[in-house]
Length: 556
Image 1 (spheres, rainbow, N blue to C red):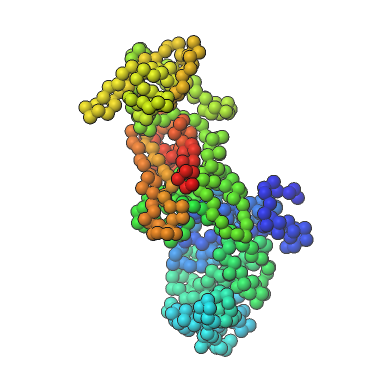
Image 2 (cartoon, rainbow, N blue to C red):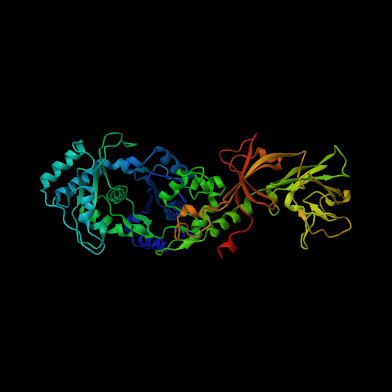
């Protein structure tokens, strides 16, 4: 096969060596195994890109498997959102959609096999007693008084657990390994617990459910996964993963490999903390554009290709590290700079009246949709006697290096005409109501016929040809580089993470944009039509990223 064009890493080196040696009959089967108990975040995007990407590049396949072993925290809403997120990122599992619950009968049989081999027992200690007997990082644990139950008694109790004879917490099934192991995960870990809860897939068929660590590796084996790739926090669980496979008559022998999880500054990815943000009303929901969830980043306007590019750039290793948020934002800028059509939008408008432009007259200018890509075509932009400009583009008493509009100064209206400010009309409170100016009719297109130089170029929209829009200026949710490290993360919320502007003036054609269409608003940044709120009769745009990294100096 052809060598993949993507950069090499230790996982690729392992796979290539396995293929060279004919291991696994030349198969490369990976899986993405989320628990359906929450929404996916940017860290999951890295795992998705890695697992599906490796399978794609080496002619294999990647399974999507829901590790649905904890029915009390799972919901079909999460299942649907996870599927949507994976597809949005550009990947497809085809016919290989699985659930741990698909294997509940076989997992139960594996548990019975362990009992029959004397490798598992039913323990009747309370949860608190189990913790006491477990020991500490420096002190060995103690054997449960129920550890030496006979095989027959354990089989009987386990069958009765399945039959629903016992209340929750009365018994658990534990592996019989080593209570003195330096690895806490090997101190007779729980394999099954009693939960009288309905399951989203199996209904009320079961009242005992396997623990994640028990179901995970065995599900890998049942699916003939070759390379079980997970993040570094599961390294301490690998001995248990291997122990279970070694004790049982399994159909295949997957191998677990760990890589560094995605740590990114100025954000949090803990499910508990994300849930707190939602429940405390800090954000408007899991898909709030300030959230690091995939659905939030999508609503913000991040293109899936930029997300894939980011995951490729940061790479994988065996060492934990922290990635700067600016790397992700720059991937987004690069993608949108090349692909987003241009448009003009005035976010904080002030009216500019061109006094010598004939009243009632209008004309249209042909403006390119992209300055470097003629294939993106052009659009007609209407012009009239009254236009809107940004209030920050006018200064009555300008400073020395202010090259925009001021009394007596001439500027270029992008693609239209040169105009010179003649006067200003103010409201009773002293604020500017209108800026008066004249235009040079010979400068159509924005260039002076006599070659005179004009430094300032302003974007604008015609009062006659514009539409109103709501624009949401999103920024990073936290002011601290590592939220929660030195203070309560809720005390480090950025008060300027969202500014909502109403009455913005935009090119009328933008009302026809489809939800999630992306644009560069000239001189403003990159924006997208809101996925849920944008409609022809209500234009709503979210700022995706600014034109430049405005946080570089803040973080430096």
